[in-house]
Amino acid sequence: MNCSISGEVPEDPVVSKKSGLLFEKRLIERHISDYGKCPVTGEPLTTDDIIPVKTGKIVKPRPVQAASIPGMLGMFQIEWDGLMLSNFALEQQLHTARQELSHALYQHDAACRVIARLKKERDEARGLLAQAERQIPMAATTAVDTAALSNGKRAAGDEEMGPDGKKIRPGISQTVIETLTDCNAALSQQRKKRQIPATLAPVDAVERYTQLNSYPLHKTNKPGVLSLDIHYAKDIIATGGVDSNAVVFDRPSGQIISTLSGHSKRVTSVKFAAEGEIVVSGSTDKTVRVWQDSKNGSYDCRYVLKDHTAEVQAVTVHATDNYFVTASLDSTWCFYDLATGLCLTQVADASDSEGYTSAAFHPDGLILGTGTSGSLVKIWDVKSQANVAKFDGHVGSVTAISFSENGYFLATAAQDGVKLWDLRKLKNFRTFSPYDENTPTQSVEFDHSGSYLALGGSDIRVYQVASVKAEWNHIKTFPDLSGTGKATCLKFGPDASYIAVGSMDRNLRIFGLPGEDHMEG
Image (cartoon, rainbow, N blue to C red; front, side):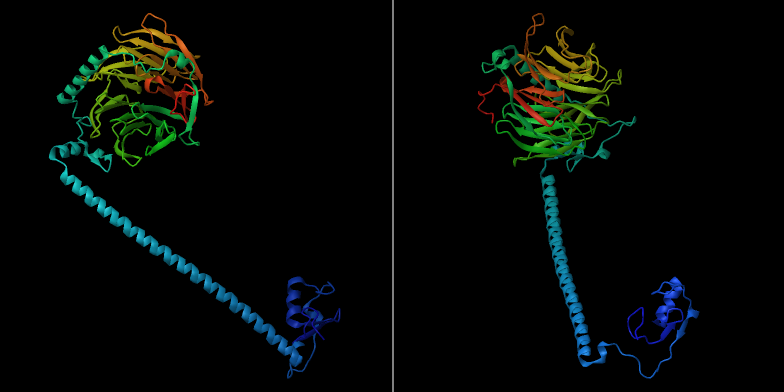
């Protein structure tokens, strides 16, 4: 008889008084303790209801398979098969472990070789740097030490501090002033003989300008071109974006030359210097960076200047190409030596706490114009750093400022449009209000010849420059094809042959004469 639960011959059999079924004692007792009923009939059952069945203890019951030689051979075969399968699985695991170990050892070896190579390159670079420092003449060493530059960054702790806690600046020396004055004299003399170039685009050509190309220079996830500059001789364009990058772009080929990554926030202003070999960029991260062409197609960061305590809104380069000025919302502007990155002077206007939102050098270089967040336009004498004139009348921040090449017209843009100022009489002689009161004018720019004026807001408008009393003709309106309604920056190309426009999407747009510019792709 077999157990009603396991189906095998019980070693310690018991029988139920109620159902008469045979069980293995340990199994039925376990079932009763768990469920309290018969596993077969489902009737209530206790341990008192089961009766032991007496059997001979000398000979134990054998399984059916072990009752014959063929059955035993079958059992041995099953055991052998299970053993072989287990052994095969262990060998597979061993092989996989060996492969993983080999791969890990290879990666460790490769990492060790890379670390060794990097250490060697670091030591070589340190050696070259030490050698270069020994070869620098003492005069240059003094200048660089004053600038306290280390690894392309200004070491703020090395600068002397005054009793009021402000950094001590060396000031604009007599030598620098003489350089600025000589430049001014030469440029003023040239301006008297200035002729409108024969190659300048005529009015009827500008009237036919249309969009030629749109180049996606900045990132999609942070769109917006906030500033641009053009180097006329090389016909290359620099742009600054919301994505914290500046981009140097070759217009004739339509190719990006270099992406300048380093700022941590929006790049608000970019300017070329030193024949396009240097780009100066200002950012809302409060820093100014000087980038130098490394001759291999990229621009490397030469200096990081941390003299401002708030967002840097504007950068403007002096006509000598030796100096530049930055203007910030911290209500100061800084005058820098381009070669050393040294801030010669930092000028604050004690009479006003408004931050600066725009800045530009006069073409002759002895006058600096700045726009403030408080609607004022301030004119500065660079040699004495004195505020020599103030223009009011705007509404909202002065977003852009541009001097005409003729030397006596100044255009400023703000929430209420564009105002034109006569620097000879220090008066506003014309106002353009192209948009409604909720649409600020974001940008304004004279072309290099002083013949055209362009402004940008929800569209782009071009005017023909005339005299103070004569009417300035509206030549052309270009729609803002970005769809954002904000043309944030614009600039005329060489001889006004095209207009480059940046908007609050990621594209640089080129407007020009279709079919006649062989350089356009």
